[in-house]
Structure formats: C-alpha cells, structure tokens
Length: 430
Image: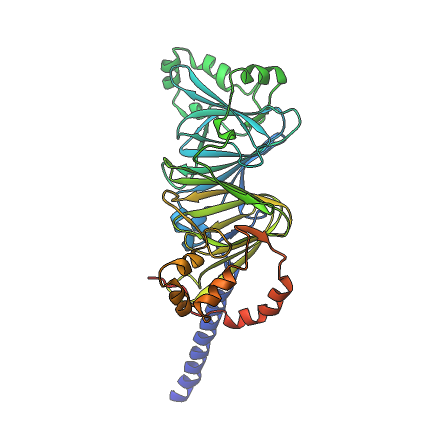
C-alpha cells in the first residue's frame, strides 16, 4: 500500500508544480499585455455608441479599467463626436458635466434653459493657437449643428459623470435607433401632463412614420441660416489673460485652466522632428489626445504597480485618435515624427506647475544650480561637479521645443549604456 501511494504522491506534486508554472506564465502574459497602462490605442480603445451616414458618437474605455494606476481618473470619461456637413445632433441632456473642444470644423451649439431662455455659441477649430471650447452643465438640454457645407465637424468632450461612473445621454426624440425616454412613463402620466389623449401624444411625439434614422440628422441650409442669426462667436477664440502660451519655430503650446472644474485645457502643435524636452506636471494628470499626425512619447515612472525605488520607461508610438495619460510628477518627453497636434485635458489642475528638466527656460535643475550653494548640491546629486552640470545644461539655448534631430547619432551610440543603467533606483515612493 505504501509503494502505491508514493507514485500517486509524486504525481500530485508534479501536477501542482505544473499548475503553479502555468499560473505564473499566465500572470506574466497579463503583465506583458498591459506593459504600457498609459497608452490607449485608437483601434481598440474606443467604443461606438451610435453611428450612421451622418456621423458617430463614441466613448473611450474607462481609465480605471485599463489600469489601477489610473484609478484617480475613474470620474472622467472621453467622448468623441463627428458629423458630416450640414447636420444636427438632436436635443439631449446628459448626467455629466461636459467640456467640449472643437478639434476641426465649426459648430453651432445651443443650450436650452427654463423660461424660454437659450444661449447660442459659434465654436471653431480653425484657430491655430487654441481651439474653441464650451462648458455644458449637467442636465442642460443642448443640440449641436455643423453649419459648414463642406467640412466635417470633430469634437472631443471631457465628461464628468454626476450619478455614477457611466455616462447616459437622454434624447427627447424617438428614432429608428432608440426610443424617447418620455415613452417609458405609464400612459396616464403623459396624458395628465400634456392634457391630451395618449393616441394624440403618441402620434405627435413617437409615431414611427416620419421618424429620423438616428440622433444625427441632415438639416437644410435655410434652417442653419435661421439658427445662425442668434449665434455669437465664442469669446474663447481670442486669447485671454488666463492663457499661458509658449512656442518657437519647432512648436507651440497654449494652456488655460478652468478653476470651477479644476481642469486644464491645452492645445499643442509640433513640427516634424521637434522634441518637447523632458518635463513634468506637479499636480495635474494630463490626458493627451492626438488630433492629427504622429509622435513618439516616453514616460518615466515607478517600475510595476507597486511601491518601489526603481523606475522604467513607458514608450508608445502615437497616431491620430490615440490617447496617452501623463500622471502627475512623471517625467515625459515627446518627439514629433510628423507634423502633429494634440488636445489635452489636465485633471486636478488648480495650482499646478509645469517643470522642465532641460532647456534654457523654467529648468528646475538649473534653478538648483543658481540657488545659494546650489552647485554644491548638484555636485552631490550627479557624478560631475556642479560647474560641469551647469555647463552641460547651458549648452541648450532653446526652451520647451527643440530640434529633436540634434546629436541623434550620439544618442544612438549611448543607447547601449542607457540599457545597462536601466532599473537603477531613482524614484522615491512612500
């Protein structure tokens, strides 16, 4: 009996070892599939809510579902809206605060308020320095027109849900794509509310005959002209004292903070070959959306999803409609591999600072060197003396955006040395 049990015991041990190895392999594969939790590829990260011949509405997957590292963004969602020329997005309200940014084209936005009050805004994405934007309070009925006879309208929205982590659009209309939310009431409620029989209510509001195909519909030029009479140009089009604009021949960046929402709105464009030098934001978590073009991004952060003193680089090749998240205090560098422009939203933006790690202006490392006894501190921080560090920093006469091709061959030669240094301790997490 003992001899029979020994082989069985060995088989059991081998089975458990095999199961453990399989489980470990599965975990490694899962980690490898999520090796860059900050990158959202446009091909598989957007979910389409509605689409027809006139346009579409789609939402980016939840940030916190991508990675636990992004759980502080669980109360924020990105929504993209596109429509063909001379189209209308039917009236709706959402259970979220909305911040609309026009990425291209022009839009006529109408906000409907009680007591027959309406506000009209004409927004455009043609401003090369800063795209127009508009805030829509939660629960406000609005509709949106693309008045242009030729150009498509593209809008990106930052949505801040007020009920839960999902966004719900409540459309008044009943179309082939969805029912009006008014239809969900019991018959006696609309009858009493409208002081009419349900048959008449159903015929006027909900009848299938004459229904639109979906929530984005065609609108004729005469109707657009009538609506446009009431519109006023957005005051956002001209830069204000609240705007922080920097730029040179390689690129430019304009930022504006909405203090009421604690959100930073940014517009950035870079020429092919330009480099936005390493920098970081002190408090804001920046959500970067690629409007047009391509770029290479490198983000440095703690290694793995745990408290550690090690860091690593998270890299991605960005193209149109890709999204990249830059956490607060994580250094990042962006190189344009073609002419490229971005729209950005910074969360937790009040009292936020942008700190540069290279360049002539706003360089926090050189700020250390210029302080009292600062060169001694730099000498203790780096391997060279303080004077050598300052001499190295001062070689770069540009600020923010510089020539990314400069010393490229020397960088390639030094890449092997960088790989050897990978994994050294350098980021304190506590």
